[in-house]
Length: 195
Image (cartoon, rainbow, N blue to C red):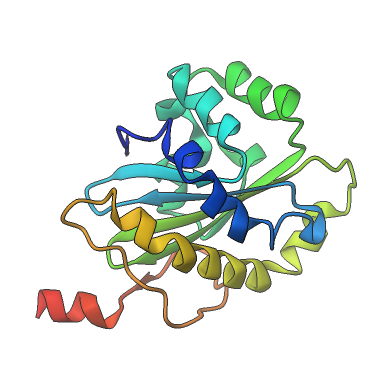
């Protein structure tokens, strides 16, 4: 995984569009942070974040490539995982300081889709100290996957400005959580371009 050259600025540049859609999710189930972490077929990652300072802090300090939460080690193997369960390549204390102390995120997790050779990752976090938060999330995974699909589709055209020759897929069908590695899904455009 390589961070896109605009990774530090894209969430700030498109902040009004991002907030327009993400506000529909913030507050739901106690969620305080939402980000779309998008990986193109060539392995380039870009964030559309409602909390752009979170990704900026990590990436501007050079920690992004070591952040286990956005590592292919996890997003290629797990459709759902908690931030606390990942291992950072280096800078563990620094990354956790940014998340836990600076942003006060208590629980964070990732939901992953695999469409047309893109990895579409929905990142969520809360500041709540409520010990029931993880159970609430597990009981609403399919709803959160559906909301993530919706948010992704809303910013898809903007994302396409950054993907070069790779056309981001449109998610046209909902697939419920299955567990394990994210299942590869394909839209009609993918089939036509490969056919």
